[in-house]
Image (cartoon, rainbow, N blue to C red; front, side, top):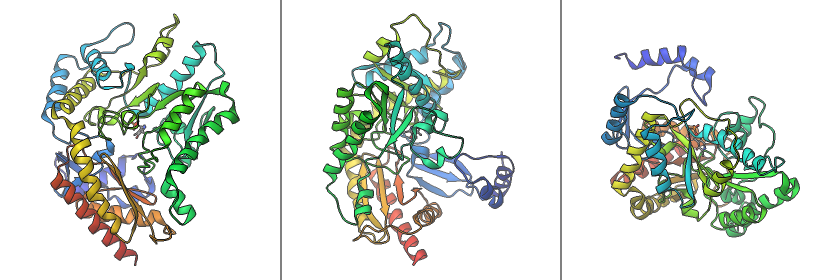
Length: 457
Ligand SMILES: *Cc1c(COP(=O)(O)O)cnc(C)c1O
């Protein structure tokens, strides 16, 4: 379709209600960026500006844009069998092959997958599955799921309820019953509160023990599960202190509650392991997956289930009354298979662990020298900059949101996608990013920080 950028913007403003957007402002400004094509780590807008996509779309295009292998497999599957379901005792080769492949790359004790169309549906599935699990064991009272402040687990009713974002809860009467939240392991924020560096290892333990305290308060016989992202993504790439996860694992084991590790972002290579759980040595009972599973080429997600949980679900002669028309969609499954096989054949996990991750860490650290940056942190192919008004005293800007939004705009205008999250700038580039492209990313980030500093001076 050939229209001018302005025509697309006008049509978009007239008809398109965007997700997570200020609808009034979008309608009035009619200035949406129109992204028209992409290749490798670059996207191109409708005026043919080339932009380095340091967010992999929305944390999903792990293998980069334009991968023929994925495109061809999906195309061929369209011809062979564009759709069939997996209800009522049927299945199809792509869904079967994908479950087997997932069992191969997932932790050894996880060999079953339930399919969804994305991460939110995966987390809705989690809520129903953990409650059904305990009910099957005769402990229906164990229905509370404990989550964390500032977590992101999707935007459906259960997903947003599990999430810890109060601005989301405020719309639509959330959370749903029996979901509670504890504090997040956000060390830099503790530094901000204290106005100085803190003992991060001690804070990691304290943040984990908030789970134990919450279980005590609610009663173990009421708690079904704890859910957390290995590294909080949308919350601002919150990398927990190393002491955090081992303590969480101990508590879940001792207290007999299920551990749900939301791998929607950390899964499929982001941390330099197949899953964030492997990076932190966590043993999940359930693992929601999506995003990088198909590198975003087609929508697919799921829940990986540990053997001991799957056994209970298979114990009774009753139906698990849950599922989606597109659970295991054959074309989406074919794209996911092609994507995972490509990750294997390219050795991308090892590359993130041994080359990309360490190189990004070293380069990203140079941004800590910038006057606006209070901390520059990375893990694998994830990174964040804490934007501060004063580095020494860890002081934030009065209106951090305005500063980071401005920075994001400068980035877009200068050929870089970085995401702004309140007082942070964050990245999650495609895993296939090269060293030269990392250099470009960091140079552009520095330049845009400079432009931001100048604009607010
Ligand atoms: C994006 C995300 C989700 C939601 O996935 P959708 O595919 O957008 O529904 C869930 N959990 C985490 C950790 C995410 O980052």
